Image (cartoon, rainbow, N blue to C red):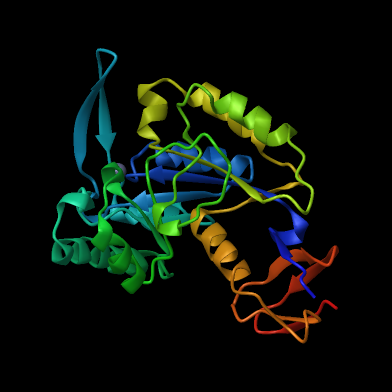
Length: 282
Ligand SMILES: [Zn+2]
């Protein structure tokens, strides 16, 4: 037997959409309402050392406020979405010695976990900055992914989840064109699965006057039965679980050693492998 497991997202889907927003600014309040309205899931990356801080930003000759929500607001706002780590004080990790990185990551992670009473599974690198020590610190902290700020303009899943390059920033001129390509392309079971990963900061929706265009994009991409709408952390955990499936008995039985139910195709037949269970696939 030399069969390949073709992994799928839940219910046999081959496409996923995930959104990632950084800094926890006050514009997250209307953004979460918008995403909830369309059944979309986001990941919101927060620096606890920045709660309630305000700075001014100049763009196109206009001055805007970058105001971070309060700890109390953060505790309730993101229900149904994922909260991710963004370091304690929003530092460029790549310039820091490992002990400072460890403090920035683990201290913020602890504060976030205390705030939302659940595990924090990933981090978005402030300024897109990291170095070779960062991945090991993330691994030791129990983080399963690190999101960069490098736009790929593609839908491939990352080869290394600690360098998860998103598809594009929501202000990218190609956004609607990429959405069109993503939606039109057929994804039969034997083709690689795809993810459209959009990132940004919600204050930019005000700064760049992009609320209208962003809602157009969300309208276009949402509520489609062939797409899995998922947070960054849930997607990373799913893909990493799918990579751990084990075949036994000449490929007749499949074992799922993970806590995640994994769907896929094997021998041209669909399967759904429950956590910690054997599945007959022969
Ligand atoms: Zn940031």
